[in-house]
Amino acid sequence: METSKFDIADYLDSKEMIAEYLNSVLEEGDNDDVVVALGHIAKAIGMSKIAEETGMSRPSLYKALSTGSKPQFETILKVLKAVGGQIKINPIST
Image (cartoon, rainbow, N blue to C red; front, side, top):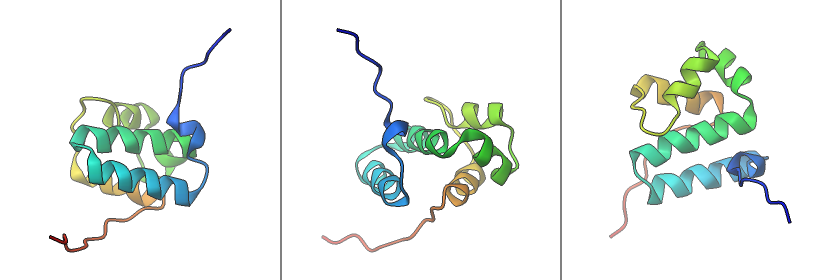
């Protein structure tokens, strides 16, 4: 039996799935998890399309959205906007 490597990008096929995935990572993950999740989302949408919308090169995006990278906040905002997301602050309930 042959198996294939799991790739979350294969399942991020709607805005709702993308939002649910990213919100889950934001809630439960750390900084690196969020950066990698944005990379998965960019891959699902199309790295070339995201590169064009952000004004960044594909290699720069791959580098910025990889494990261990520390992208600037400006880069995060550009990618969020390109994938159709936004940051919204809600009070934390205690």
